[in-house]
Image (cartoon, rainbow, N blue to C red; front, top):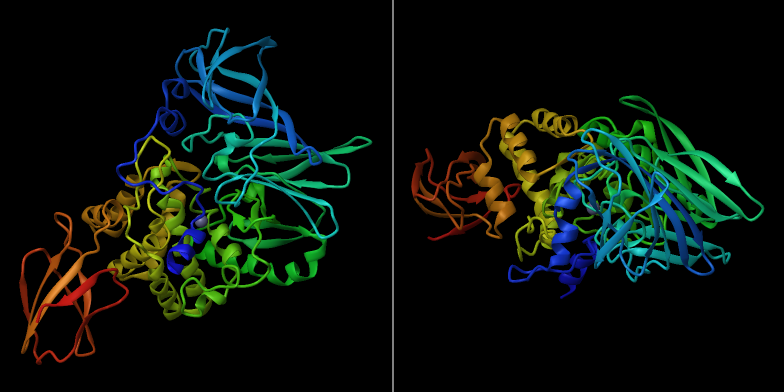
Length: 543
Ligand SMILES: [Zn+2]
């Protein structure tokens, strides 16, 4: 029970557990698929303007969507979740009317949409957005106060979707090619930190408007608002692509603690640029921003609420001690800049691309600073969090992510691939290659799987099918008679023939099991036998 609870608490998704028999609704299809009303237009830019009123817990604003017409159609789907309301929609100064089906709104454009043309539409909205009960897992707005009684406000909406507070095309395959501009108006004594760079502050007698600009494509759930009485410091990090601005924002009361703890941010940058290649958003800078919840990978404004201590809220998720050598939220959430923000899933069913690789990044951080044994012990330790309840890959086109095993089973299968490749420089070049090949793109799991197969020279098709699409863990069955080892795989999908290292009389030997029995004769009688633990397989001596 405890494990299960722990496990749920590390799952950053607001999505409820879904078993195969779950019936999906029309609403799931409207949010989770590329409907005809979404397919014909491609967002190039969002200009989101929001005024935040802390005393009423309301927001009001507009989103000007720039888009390219891919097909000449006139009905456009925009998502905005109740109780937020659309107040008005304008295109070229003319009002646009719409019908609604739940949280999906179908706009009937008056203007003929011509293929290849760039158009704009502005949606005005207002309301009292859903308050997050357990951010970041359920998502919405969080309205709290700091110890000086000043408002401390933030958005988090990974599972529930950005349309919980602003109108957009709320599907992960859509990233605005030219980024977003986010203008947030706050009471005068507060500050807003959003994504990208602060380009302007507009003051009135009572308010300040903070204008942030992101020039790179950004995933919608990454767009965030963080409002508080922040203090700011920063540094120029000498990175692979030159000087990188790293900026830090924390509540005044936490400045001293944060200045110490956030020293791990440049360490993180050093380790991850080594393993994954250059930070993917030099133009937008990197920021670590205190938020009133645990944390989230908001692109170029990673949010942080891990009490300025190592571990995951002070705990070690691996149970090995290594998890207390780093601040889980600084490392994990920043790891997502490469896997989630740079390489983004086209459909949340493939979210293991975000969470598997990022959970894996935790042990690569350890590997960089503490060595290979630390990294291996950590990733093996996290196996206790695996439940094998459902496949890692969810159901496509219905906003359904797979099992929470996408985290630590994901990490362990990547650790297994590292063993199979048996060449750490090659493995590193594959991880870096992924970030180059799929730079600023949305992708499918198949693309990632095929890339790794191709670059490693190992056909991993059955491997991925086994671990990502079933809950079955391969089992090496064996028996020993004198010098002879008889072995085979059980519990595998068709054609699963991944070799493993066996430790025979303390010596490492590759063996090549398939579903057929094989016999291998050793020079000496076999005294001891085990499969090397770095391979995520089970084994059983049938005697
Ligand atoms: Zn994560």
